[in-house]
Length: 468
Ligand SMILES: *Cc1c(COP(=O)(O)O)cnc(C)c1O
Image (cartoon, rainbow, N blue to C red; front, top):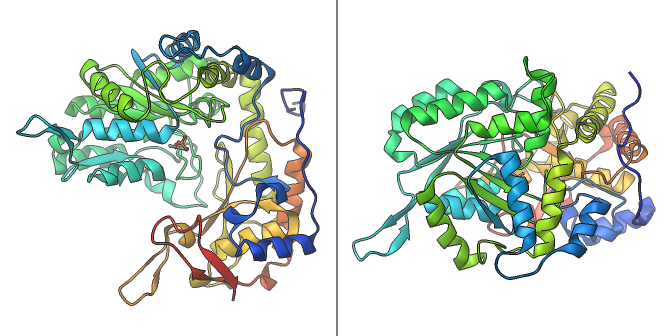
């Protein structure tokens, strides 16, 4: 087979600033060894996230100029509605400013009650919402409303080195038993995340989506898909699931969503947009409630916190993401990085996911105890050696303390290299692999870090570190 090439030409470029290792040591020290505090300008290759960082196409930019900024009934809204209905197939679509706004509205709507005085209150106490793995904002929105967010991914999905074609799958038997155990009246919603971001960008099979829908139907529970990376998931189904080899991405997407009652979506992922999202569903009663919540914080239902130009960019992006040449390049280029570094000995979550490569820092740096944050040490080394920015997903992000102030570490110490869509070329990725392999060679010299200052919540964003 011929080399898979970037399926686009470059019309507009953004210069990147070069720094020396000496510069970067100073910059990192000034940022208290926390990459979130490094000015983006001082980063050579930014793999912090694939969210909102996509390169928009010339047609998307043309759409931005063409956006209709009318308050109600904007032409851009109708285009957005047409495209989303074509792909996702749900009756009602509400635009929102990001995926988390859709999650906030949906979780409040399914956990709401009317009290004796006729007031609308949200009370999730004693309620449970299962998912393969909740993304952190989904979990936070559910927990903020008092309910419990439950992860029921298959066992294979919890072990980095175990191979499985659909490591993001829900454990169907566990789901069935779980609902029976807590009582269907206490499960107001069930979700599945495609691809499973928290689990390493791993796909969910069509069969698994269908069976999850079937279980939900049996108990009368609404089933929603977290659709952020729906096109990447659809492409994995085409590659790996029998019977889908010859189906188009649109056909696969339509079938995935046909098993669900609705979806939440961040357009910052598989819609190539820099901002935006939506909430979609079939049920009229739920829709009415969501629409009321929307108006309180996001705006009228034909713009939902977005400008008309954003709706145009999303609509155009959704058309483009269905392109198989793009998806082939996308999935291949992520795997390419994963294969290159794992061949060189670097332990990663296997097989490579859709949007990111996750390095297993605990296995890479076994001489650094978890109390000295091996993931953070690797992230700092990536920046010093190559100006590459990545994010620790381990005990910095998820660690807690016991009553004696001793660290309760996270289950895994990972470093995520997220690949922005259409932004970097193959030589950028080759460079990233080179830097990582160089670090691998000198891994025994790498030292750990300690936290010198931290906030109460979400400490990975603002904690300050120092080398041990
Ligand atoms: C990014 C993301 C979200 C939240 O979307 P935002 O637009 O960042 O609010 C929800 N779920 C998954 C799986 C995501 O990756």
